[in-house]
Length: 552
Image (cartoon, rainbow, N blue to C red; front, top):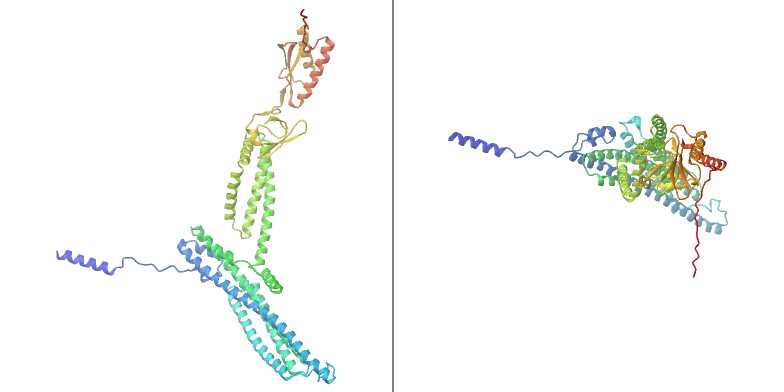
């Protein structure tokens, strides 16, 4: 009893000190430690992760993208402000020159001296003091601007240290723009020194300082725009990696619609067309960027090459298909043309879809959209689909071919062409009739030229008073002597009917299908000529009318 009690106490103690469940530490993103990781390597790192872990990775990459977009927005705001400063500086320069000219005019009138003399252009102490203050202010600003430009250049250099061989075009452009800012600063300092030392007119001093200031602002703005191009390049690289993460999350059942909307909203290059200089600088920088214009150039070139290759491959496979089908003698011309066109178009369409993927277009939704459109169109065009199905049945069963004489759907003529929806028939009076395949397949189809030989059915009548044996002998002689009448199968001449006005003979020779009407017309003419020569009468319907006069 005591032993059982001790065991129970030990068990309760273990339950008390042992936690009921262990809480795992929340998952932390690991793939964002190297934002410049190659997309292919990133795919491999994401492959073993679960959906909940991929969601954490997605949020981490989106945070990097969001920070980069915010940095771009601030840089664009700074560039716009610098543009406004340039406009204000130009306006101030015009106003100062105008003010100096207005002050100089009264002196010329009162002193009688010309505007070019020292007396007429003697600057006032107040304006000289403003110029000196402006020189000091600009010199201080120039130092600050150059320091900021050098810091940006150094940051770019540090970010490209790991991939020095693949330094971006935007980074190199920033280095050039930084040198240009330093040159502009040197020019400004040189202009200030010249103004302080030289005994020149006040108006010239203002112009010289103003032009140096404008040049400095312009160079700084160019440096800011180059920095924006670099940031856009980095954003594009981040966007590529975010799309890789989204694809991995979507493949494992994650909902990425909201993420994709954000990525699409912040992607792309937006420019202010009113600011021509900024637009030109951004576009040129984008064209030189490996993540921008150069990549798109390669993608477009790849697209064109793939489409051309797909077209060439489609032509080659179409010819091979035509040769392969031609080896089967039972294959109709319609089926041959259909297979050749199907192979060529299918290969070309597949090539275009693959080429679209080279442009960064996600072909998955594209294929799904085509399927949805196909369903809607198919529902709306049920009759057309019925004709399509009938066309397939005609191709499979081959009731006729191009060049055959057919009678179907109330139309008689020669088949000129056929596709999966319609058959074009040319009638004997040279009319072109386009018949839906559904109407043909739903009716009787008589292929007049379906066989190599054909029997010509004719009927000739003689009067009741003529010699039957003689008439039959004449008909047999005519058929036997005609060169286009076949010996096998043998012709057939028989007395067939005792009609109202004549004794009718059937005359049925065999001939080639192409000679049908020649035999028909020749035999008919020969029978008339021989009957007339031999005194055999060809009767025509007669009616005897007897009139009886009835007496009143």
